[in-house]
Length: 78
Image (cartoon, rainbow, N blue to C red; front, side, top):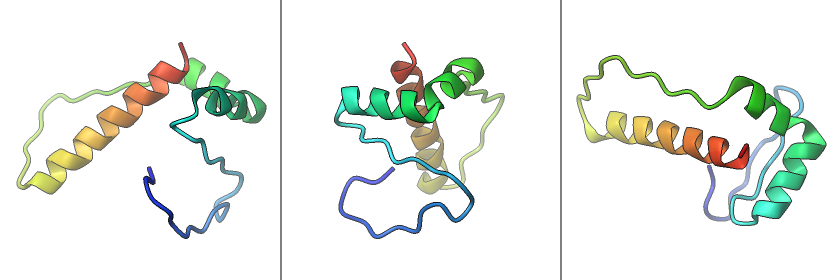
């Protein structure tokens, strides 16, 4: 996730899409055009944490980022 101007290398692993998170209608339009909406619906946003041990704040922040991303993906599919 990017929240400020950033230079990025895109498409190095094949087709990719950048979705604006602050413009919901445009995000949904891009998701429909690229087929991402059906991928999200069919796969769902799943978070499974059986047990976790965090040695530092970086690990906990990474988990929080993943949970937030899953929640955003789920909100786009509804």
